[in-house]
Amino acid sequence: DTAVSQTPKYLVTQMGNDKSIKCEQNLGHDTMYWYKQDSKKFLKIMFSYNNKELIINETVPNRFSPKSPDKAHLNLHINSLELGDSAVYFCASSPRQGDTGELFFGEGSRLTVL
Amino acid sequence: AQKITQTQPGMFVQEKEAVTLDCTYDTSDQSYGLFWYKQPSSGEMIFLIYQGSYDEQNATEGRYSLNFQKARKSANLVISASQLGDSAMYFCAMRPYGNNRLAFGKGNQVVVIP
Image (cartoon, rainbow over all chains, first blue to last red):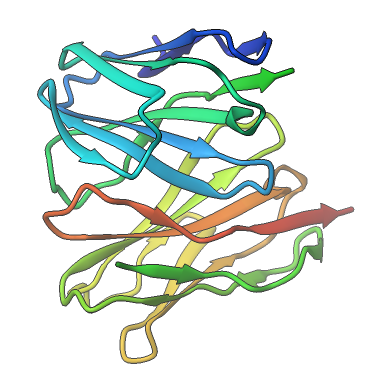
């Protein structure tokens, strides 16, 4: 069983469209994250949720809206897609807020905006 | 905010040789964790090794060891006996204790040649 799973793995869409990426973790973790990896491979945190509560919102445009229906799921909805949104989006989880351990990453979702 | 610096250009390493990947960081936090992740061409983020700022011993995990020099704020990764499967991007990351923000460096590309 995959610990942190994201769907879809690949997403190709037109500018202006709205799309969602789903993430689920079966590790029983309290904390989940979205990271964006740009074309230069730089990884930057976007959001962090702890037990469905938003903890970090890292100056991300309002077009990005995360939603956590329960602590095992964290979805990312993106409105009015722009070319610059093309990137790999990683979901991750960790056991507790502010703990010292590593993050467990999903396989990434590659978004291409045409 | 923490800053993680990885400045080495892409590296070519002979199979079975050791390679050291440099990482320096800048933080005002006294308590933090340091991490190394591997990202092969398939794209997933693989956790390799962790070092706590208060750990007196350098961390080791199989062929991976972390050369931690707290006063110099460096956390270099040493991969011993390189294998072809070690070809990947390697990311250094840091997270202050009690903080969800795991911040990444820009990565080092390593290519192992037979």
